[in-house]
Length: 231
Length: 216
Image (tube, rainbow over all chains, first blue to last red; front, side, top):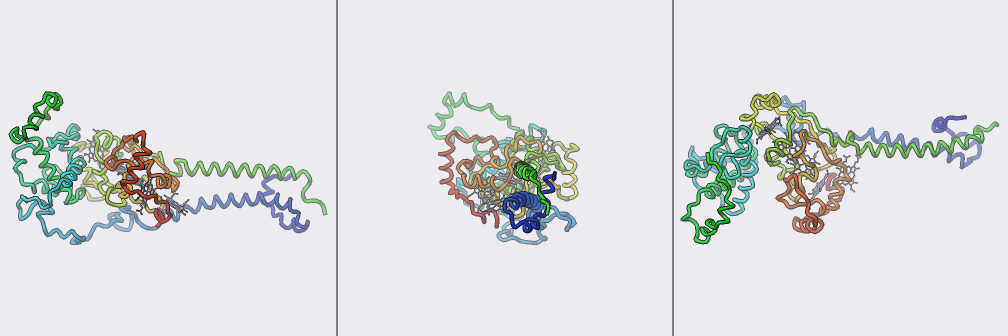
């Protein structure tokens, strides 16, 4: 009695020839061998996988032992200027020119810019400054010292460049956002801050009769949210 | 010359054939199972990180937008990882003494990078690009799952080719309005078939299934 496994490994070809190629036996003997090879092949394939998977190149931000600081993405050499990044217009790039905050908005002011500003404000500023800019964002409820409210006379009168300067260079305990928010978006956010300031500081006299009627309507009063505490 | 095979070996070879077929079938099934198991796909396994950063707290709890920390996801192939500066925007002021955050403070003080362990890892011969997906209305959730419920990041899908292709063949099943891409609890409307088809037309989504889309 032979063990089936032995059958798998036996070289049967010689005996086949000797017996004048007896096909049934040949097949019987070869099929398991074929299967065995297929199996070995499959196992071998799983062994090959990783070489093409882990190719000898670096992906963005990968770690490497080659450089002392372990960064494969190399910081630009000081003084490098990328296309379109020659920051000669310091007013545009930092909000401040010759030590003075820029007064004039340097881009065409359109609805798209304001919408972009709202979008970006809600991503980057709202967690701390709150959706309406009172300095009461969610992080404040978790122990952050209140950032200043935008709705003060000092900030209402501040030149538009002031906000871009703060975003670019940070201010007080707020760090710079320049690495996360490109300069165009910083200007868009500044414009949106003006919208917020306007929205919280409308004089009844500035409204048309129709709008005033809407505001005075009883249902508008009932729906009015509790006044947010201005700090 | 005596017979090498006795008549009884017919039975033996029949049985061994059967055994082999069953074994191969079983191995095939086992390999298939293994290939789709968390072990091979690295999915469903939370990764240890130098800082036990919790998306559950920051995204689910605080509602911070993905782009606060992954700012280039809409612009480049790479989604971007937060700079130490990004963490310190908040953590210079809150949780300043938490031992968990020691590596972040170290990195801030010394300028050495934090080294996160990569969770999602496509093979080197596959090209993937975040910006195109995000801008054509594919939500982060479609590929990364409910990130806002993950105390530690893990991979949800297999990231196998069949998984990519399932969506590339039927984008209308997965597309959502662009302004809902970053929303984690988006629910597809009951008439997604219509809405999806409309969005596919509106965003001009093509069905990319050519090999060179991903292997270039």
